[in-house]
Structures are given as C-alpha cells and as structure tokens.
Length: 226
Image (cartoon, rainbow, N blue to C red):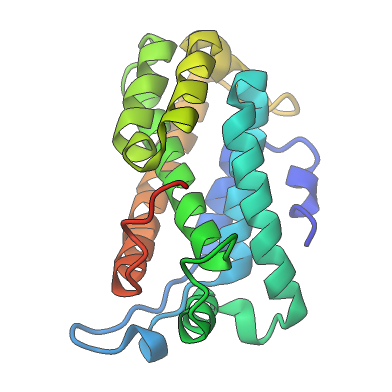
C-alpha cells in the first residue's frame, strides 16, 4: 500500500491527517454487545494516519529514528496482511479476531502487537502535539519527555527507554519544529498550523480511545516490549 498520494505532494502532514481522520468512520458496538460482530475499525485509513505520523517524525529529524523504524515496521506488517485479502481485512477487528483464534496474537511479531504499538505511538504524537499547541514556547525536550513518559515509557524495557532518553536530548526547539511542520506550498501561518493541530488532536483522541477499548477486550492493552 503506497502512502496516500505521497502526502499530497507537499500538503502539510496535519492537513493529510485531518483528511484521513475525517473519513475514518468507526462503527461502534452497543454496550454489552460483542465487539467481534459490531465494531469496525477501517484498516486502510488507520494505516494512512500512521504514515502521516512517519512524516512528522521525519521532520523532527534523526533523533526520532528509533520510533520511526518501529512505526514503519508495524505499518508494513499490517499492510502485508491487509494486501493478502483487502476485503476480509478491511476491518482491523478481523485481524485481531484471526490471531486470537490462532493463538498467535501475543506471540512473535504479530499484527495484533503491531496495532498495539502503532496506537501507542499515535498516543505519543497526540500528547506531544497537544502540549505544543497549548504552549508554543514550551521547551521541546521537556514536552517530548513528558509525552513519552505518559504514553510509551510504561510499556518499554530499559533498552528502549535508554534509547529514547538519548534521543530526547537532540530534538529541535519547539519554534523550529512548528516552522518545519508548515506546508511550504501554502501561505501558512502559526495560527493556521495551531488550528490544524487542534483539529487533528480533537479527531484523533476519540479514535484512539475506541481502539484502546478494543485492545482491552482482546487482552492486548497490557502488552510490554520484549
């Protein structure tokens, strides 16, 4: 699966994320119902959102290489299964159901694990963007560290935590990052970018919460890095 229109050939990552999130309609199950038959998480739009995340990480720079590689590998894993039967695996829940029935969800490099870590990576991104838009002058290193501590660190082993500890010391300052995130092909401004970021966060948070609910139903929400 190719990145959607290669990020619209210069359109901002925020605009692309808004587009994908706006089209990502979750069909939710009713209280007490079976998630297997009532919830639909569209696979392709979700992976497109994750590809938007890669573009953001690329702009932060090589300091986010560890997280970028993790995201990229997990996207590839899910894309491979999706491409094997797009009709069946258009719903992420079908992927979780398949691996649960096979007993492979928590073993090795499963697609279920890929979904868990992609969701957590988006949690990190959402938390970071929220902090930056609330206070554009916030110290970037502290913002990344705070976001990491509440989203990824609880699930990382000491090796991953150490790698992030080093990376966070090398991130650009918040003003530089906001400038980098602006679309070069448009007459953008800080106000426009802040509005886009707020929109992304407002759309992304409820989607992630619903996915976390599903992961909990499948007993995957407590998985830690091995």
